[in-house]
Amino acid sequence: MLRRVLISKIHRATVTDSNLNYEGSITIDRNLMEIAGILPYEEVLIADIDNGSRFTTYVIEGEGGEVCLNGAAARKVAIGDKVIIMAFGLVEEKEAKKIKPKIIHVDDKNRPVKS
Image 1 (tube, rainbow, N blue to C red):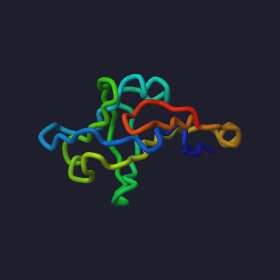
Image 2: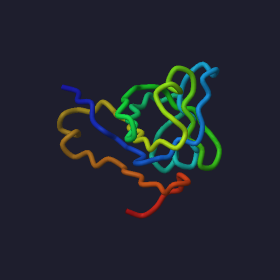
Image 3: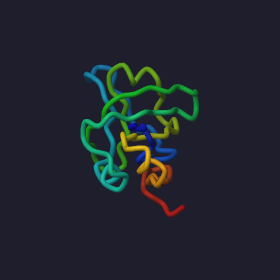
């Protein structure tokens, strides 16, 4: 049986921008994506710590420190909100028991910090 498990997350990223007129997605600093193992166009779950919203979207690459919600997702957040960005994967149950997700903590400028 396949299980859907957390593969990685970027914890407490700060929303730097929102763009209601873009067709959709979340733009994330490509360096953070690489560190977290998140791929372009991968589906992610976003949890807004400030307002409790949870929603899914897909990822596009951005510039240094960028975390921008686009399209309809822009209505779910405010600039400055803290969010958790979570990527999941489907793995066999035996593998799922061994999964250790990558947890990337960031500072207020979305730079990785040691936890």
